[in-house]
Image 1 (cartoon, rainbow, N blue to C red):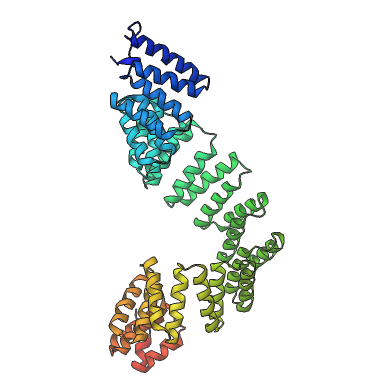
Image 2: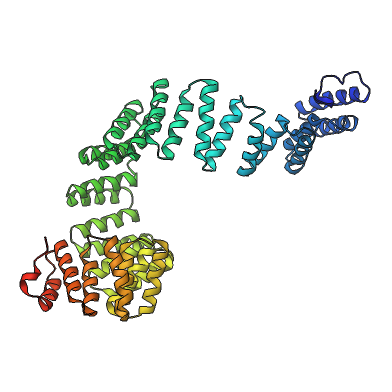
Length: 481
């Protein structure tokens, strides 16, 4: 039996009767939005019945409506001091913490409430959602499975379970749950998309594409669905379908830059760079020349080996958006390819001014310094910073090894160049560097093996062939089998 206003035996007992009367008046005032008067009545009731947790809850609820959250929390905690498992007090505390973004405290409150309200779907689903926000997916899954047992199967619960299983990489269970959701709601394009995404994450691109196509049938005017389908088709190497879907996006939303880039990417992989140029030039006129399209045009011209056109495209992108670190970086790379290395280094420094944490710009500038054997201490510092951001990037490791080589520190150079060769096993430049370091350390056999590996990767490297000619008979130059 609960005490005070929370009980059932107080009516007709002097002060408790007065407490009850004040409590009822407080309820009427609260429901009429006369909140100050409600507070006064609840305080009067509490003076008559100080052991009532319910009165503290009503005081707290009224304080919430008045925006006095600290006072509300004090009242709810007083209710719990009188009755530690009071469900309404726990519910209010949980909701207050959640509304203020205090997720751990909200979770703790709902966990205290759960044994009291174990069959309350709202408590179960809310706590599950909080677990998701905290990244505690297995706990959320357990609660959703409990909801299925409590409320029976629903499309939404199976959908949520499917998404959560997918987030922790349990794709078979994800597909099973999402399929159950679809059986219960066959007209849902959202479930089809979730199935497509799950198959895509599991690298089953054809099945993903089938679900995306079905979602499109259900919602043919939704450009996001065509984006999904285009991405899956591209991953499945069904480039014609990818192009069709990207074009469908552009038919619905002609200014969609992602779809333009996607269509260009399809044309490049199909070895149609001229068509990519045509698309970009048309869209540049149509969309008032956004910088992103000029940057893409520069990359396409680079693919076509039109270096001066590429340079002009990157320059135009910088003019339109002078604060774009990516445009500055692409322009610097193009300058280097045109043997304008001094200018390239200036624009790499400009890139780092715009984005001090760009590891590619750090690495590129360091490599150019090493190639020229200048500013080697700065070069080492730059590439070490790049490696802090991306420790297993083989290109960065190679650059650091090359900097040490230029410093004459062969042991360090070989240490990093050997690691680079393990990380990037298909780059002849790495093996060329490693061969140079071994040759400098007078290890001819190791040098030969490294240079021969470089020639296996690119037989057209006459510079490396000349190095081998200088240290080994002609018959040893042929790539090893």
